[in-house]
Image (cartoon, rainbow, N blue to C red; front, top):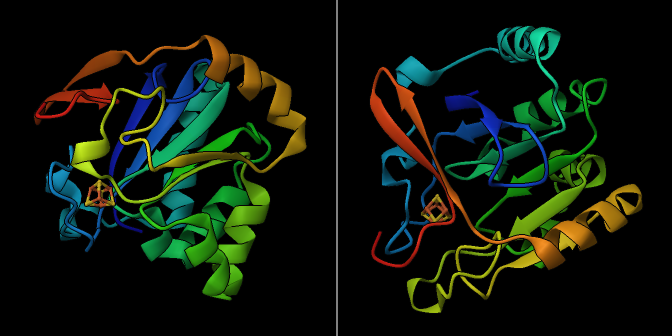
Length: 189
Ligand code: SF4
């Protein structure tokens, strides 16, 4: 896989203390994208699924994990490895929220078994491309064309409450590469 970032605890992209994972690689080039540095896959970010799982298990062994948020980049460009990874983190949490620039309908039309496996094993999908002129600070969504789909009924109440009461916040992480600003940013950030 090509994985640029693993951050913990991410508290602004889903309920609770989450492990946030940013996959590298996206060819959509949405104007105003907040992560253009993640468009091009980089050799230094290559990691085997087994190694990624080891790192995740290390975080889990010492911390409370309420869920995962997977973003990018475009996660579904790595659907084969991502489906394998997601199925192997269910022992930690099945609350797995994934951001994608594809619409749910486009994903279903792919008829790709790995894409289907991801859709059937996550709790929430936030879908659709980022449209700068529709960035209206809607909770959890970069632009209002994007939809939040609760795909696992077990999490419906949790997310209904979260979506009703939450507001966008920004969380900054300091890494050796500098400050990584996480959350739904305002237009022109
Ligand atoms: S789909 Fe997401 S990562 Fe890709 S260019 Fe658009 S906003 Fe950026």
